[in-house]
Image 1 (cartoon, rainbow, N blue to C red):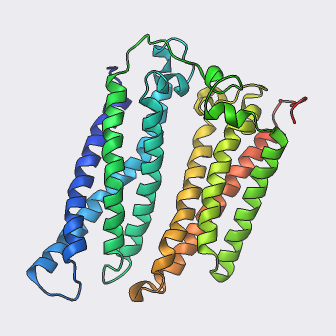
Image 2 (cartoon, helix red, strand yellow; image 1 turned 180 degrees about the vertical axis):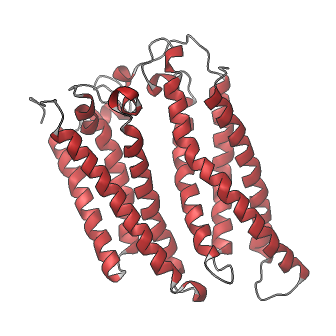
Image 3 (cartoon, rainbow, N blue to C red; image 1 turned 30 degrees about the horizontal axis):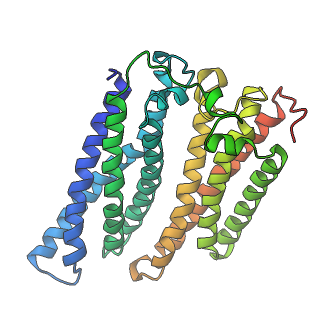
Length: 334
């Protein structure tokens, strides 16, 4: 195992988050079974006091769960020099078979954590804990993902050995490689650009309609998810080319490095901010008729819609500027 501050922070925090989430979920089972806001029983009073404390603690832990995704990527990138053949986080993640699995799990738990935080914030605005059951049901769904992530991440880091021969990003993200990276690269450049900007335009239009008359919450949530997927593919397909100013460098991780102004961090933060906020709009839609949230949820949905739309617009502007001022001349690219 490699001793590194980032690795130690991730291992310790993941264990703490797992323990706290598991404890909260155990209480969640009791709440789902016995919660009755109209009851004045001792059990109900105990549950009310306990859920306030647990929700507050889980809230802080899940905020760090969001941060841990970027800490994980940053740590993987910072130790790439320890592995033969690695040039960025790609090589570190490929050093054993658990790297990319950990990354995928972190993306899933990031989105779920963000949605839980939205649900918890909304629930706190009601005077009668209106979303207590949906909130703890979502927490119960998160438990297996967080526990598996903790185990897989632990195995990944403990099995990392210095001087391991691994693959560089040029090998993984090339048309001759096997896997999803090569499948993305065979997509034609111009149609991918049209898809990217077209998807952005539709998402913004749907968001504007939602802000104007409150209609289309589920459609907007779906479009934000689709825009996130298309944006991720676009980073690999063509956006990275203009950042690196190299016609064959498609790596989505090198853009996180100093040589490229760490531009990857704002891009990915904007993408995740956009998708979590957008999905949150759809998550809250079924609860609009809750008596204590009739006026609360529409206001929160408008804020989330604005955050999502602005995040993706800024993302698109940054990409447009990178393309406009790039020294790359993609002659021969279609």
